[in-house]
Image (cartoon, rainbow, N blue to C red; front, side, top):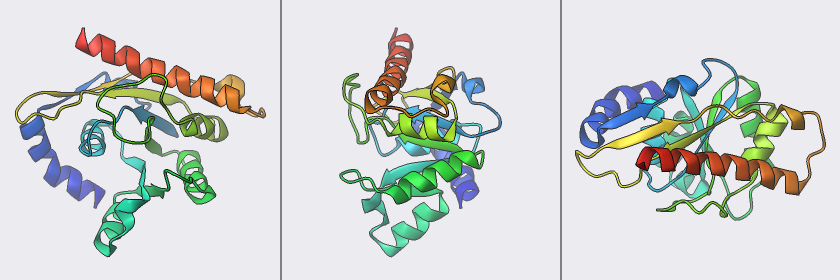
Amino acid sequence: MYKFVKTVGGPFYRLIFRLKPVNKRNVPKTGGVILCANHSSNHDIVALALVCPRNLRFLAKKELWQSKLGSKFFNAMGGIPVDRDNPGMDSFRRSIEVLKDGDALAIFLQGTRRQEIDTGDFKSGVALFAVKAKVPVVPVYITPGYKAFGRTTVTFGEPISFEEYHDTKVRSEQLNEIAQQVMDAIEGLRVKSEG
């Protein structure tokens, strides 16, 4: 299903939104990795999947699984449902398994759609996943808007390693500091792309 959507949907998205990847070489070719992006539209996960050099698993709101068709589709696409109001251990365990299996996991740092980046508004889950699974985080900035025949740029930043926190008991303040570092990196990509 993933390959089918990428093959069939790819040409349409590339034509309509003129997708342009920048620095996709920053995505490690192998091994577990988190791609952490801003989130302004439902198109974001498709755009990211189409330009990323690796197949992605992704976290998404559980409401997308409410219908039988939606459940089948998002399961086939590699989605992992998460309750945004009360994240449970199941989505956490599945995400860690994905990363430890050497796959790439996409996460939207602010948890829900925001037209603009608020550097003080983010979820710390990405930090917990990165530390527990011992994987780097690649910050990603996706230009908002998705204007027909405009230009949508997906910019990949350099991987950020948090090795100093591996095998340690990380406090909530430290998780927030890690997430803040990722958020600042995404904001940096925005400033560069718009400058």
